[in-house]
Image (cartoon, protein in one colour):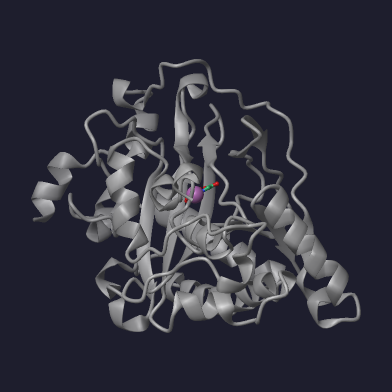
Length: 347
Ligand code: OGA
Ligand code: NI
């Protein structure tokens, strides 16, 4: 099996070292602009949520998620020195020899483990990124064989990080509900006790032809919400707003929180799941860590009743297994959330 893996697997890192950009990575429609305007992503101070300034901060959170589908959060309880360690384990893992990393290689038809972009359709352009994709919660679904043992502190640091992300995601989902005058558990309850958390380390090697290659092609996340630890120094993430691409700024030691398709549905479209992409650059590598909160697939989700009224009719159907729907529409080149939308004509 391991031999088999090696013959099919070529990491983007290897391509970068050989200065090769295969055709599958090249976008032929237009040049990719990496110097578009900066998006003014609101910075929400989570410490203020427990102070007398709570109302004001909740308003900022709400307006940010309506305005661009994302916010930067600071004072989230994770120390700068600890986030430095998280950056380090990611860098150190991808810097290991190929042979060591391949111990955690994903199989061809699975997304979990270390690998490059999964090929879902023939026409698909590939992302200029190597990934380490890990299942983290509930603990029962962890596949520890895929959790690196090098660098030595990987598991310990990672575990502390994801435990923090679990708590943070719960407070964020509560704050999001309260900001809309809803009962605080209404998003969290829809995510369910069996909700999953998935972590993805993204490693973007420098690319010899950044004007025609993307680190990640445009997509919106299938999650309820996503929490992203951006690279501390190297930009790359862009968000589409009003049909225009904007750069997402780096807030040192802040975390970027974005709405995923499933909270867009739960909020009946008040919060929008932003389409985003990652651009590459010719001389610096970039490391990020995304944590996706995925609602339990057995119960399904739908717009919160209190958000459906005459002024704002129900805009989405209830959906059961959104992730399955997500991958099906992906193959047809459609935005997955369109499948859940109720067309105006049908009302
Ligand atoms: C993702 C993603 C952005 C980044 O992993 O879904 O959008 O900057 N990542 O790595
Ligand atoms: Ni994303």
